[in-house]
Image 1 (cartoon, rainbow, N blue to C red):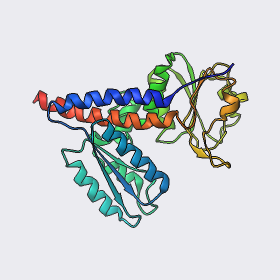
Image 2: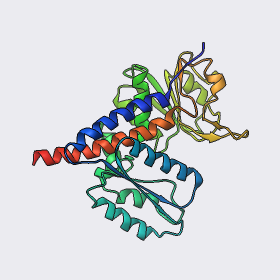
Image 3: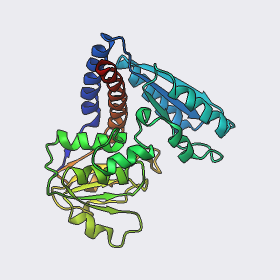
Length: 288
């Protein structure tokens, strides 16, 4: 068996086309969806990420603002800047690129973002809404994974899903979305006893640990759907995921590659969240 490759690049392109069409429709009402991306520090990977996000916005006909600040920026100054963006009617979504410098409390920064502009979906009120099955914003990476499963016509109700990784950014919200869709979900982590036992019983395996090659083909149920959220730099300098792709693709029914899998979908869903925020502004305007 050789797994079908779930092409995140192709699916993301289709989603971005839809966003562009929605952006044009909003323009007819005098609204241009706006995203502010804030980067503190000079982390090379973060710089690449934010540039990609801003470029994707512009290609979709959206308004984008990239604000870059030195590592020495104080927490108070960052919070003040976020407050200004919260009040800016041309900005519908605010994203502060993580990680932040160690002297800045990322939790305080996330909570400072207005909940209705929290297009990352990390604000505590949005996390609570997700828990109850009524999310305002779905975190971008889990949202993208759900779209990939939808594109593969995966039946989630009754399926057994294992999420490896329990972060607030991916693992936990991923589990909530799967559970809301009717799957039976187990959350594992790098210290789970006999991780292979859990993954071998899963119809869907989603891995987000930041540990290269953590899940191998012999840990999978034949025909399982495998979503690799990880992105790492291997000893050979090449990008690789948290799943050993070579062995997993011989067992899985469908699998995401790294790169070219979940990564492009994360950016596409950021655009969708920003679009939804802008459309809510129009909806409020028309109901007054």
